[in-house]
Length: 440
Image 1 (spheres, helix red, strand yellow):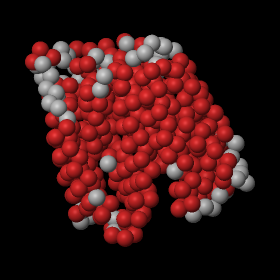
Image 2 (cartoon, helix red, strand yellow; image 1 turned 180 degrees about the vertical axis):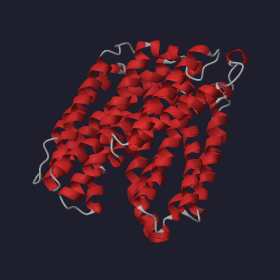
Image 3 (cartoon, one colour; image 1 turned 45 degrees about the vertical axis):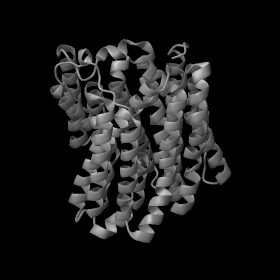
Image 4 (tube, one colour; image 1 turned 135 degrees about the vertical axis):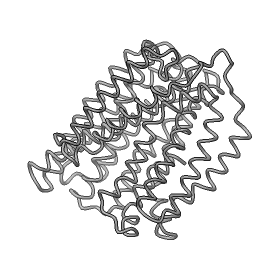
């Protein structure tokens, strides 16, 4: 539901714009506020799950998400819709930060990769069906139906969760005296400032006063956050987690992987629609190649990692991703469509092989009483990688397009962007390889 909602909103933005007579700059906030809200709150709700029980935070997440979805559908204006999307983001963060911890706690170690692989498949299915379902529903029932559909789905999920997820209150001696509210506030302020600068840098200009100011503010807030976490008795983020080599390298590898995959997500629509002249429907059909392959491969790689060890599949997966990006970097003005789909299939294969084993390694390296914050770190790595991928790819594309303001400039920007992403994937192959070979 949360993955579908993140992709479906992008599809109906033009329809929403016509309904409210809104400019593109305003419409972007429908997506941006959701991204920033989730990213800034993931660690907070992961830690809250460690302290109060993952089940309770997860259940409240459904309630908040369903309420936010209903408010989105009822929104009388763009301001109302943006505020309602912020409410959705709060619920989405509560769900995303605690679902991997719940799976990890309720499945034995020899089934953890399989469980996380199935969860990854559900995520990719949401991403796959979102654009097509959103377009169809907006055409048949209007854009508000895209948000209303979350209400029955969310209520059903809430009932199933109440019935089947067992109580998981931590022991009294596991509970610190209080929640690190100051640390949570400074982390959210710093991360939101950083992600907003990276998200809008290619549009506002990387040297503009707004972007420079946001980056400076992010630096101050995040340094202050680290200082707080070193001093408080019960920190929101136990920095000792990053002294565990398997944990820190898995987190770094996750950021690099998502940077690469979202470079593809950002650049290819420009290549297909603006440079090649394809219709949005045709481009969308081609782009589904990657998530479909990922959905097929992720549960298999997760199951195999339980038997063979996580590094055995994660490291080759990053290497295959690098090969797929190199294939895409060779695209030109006359490249056949089947060549594009092959490149996307290779990218999907590599990513699907990598994600489930790497997630299993990261969560397995965290102590049981820190699984919630580990889940939050994992989800935060995904969002940071995504925004960095879009920011870097956007900077490369706009620079190349400015140098040659025609189709050739778009193609050059896309090719350079994929080459940079391929180099990042090679770095990710190294960080995954040095993680350690023991089964987790």
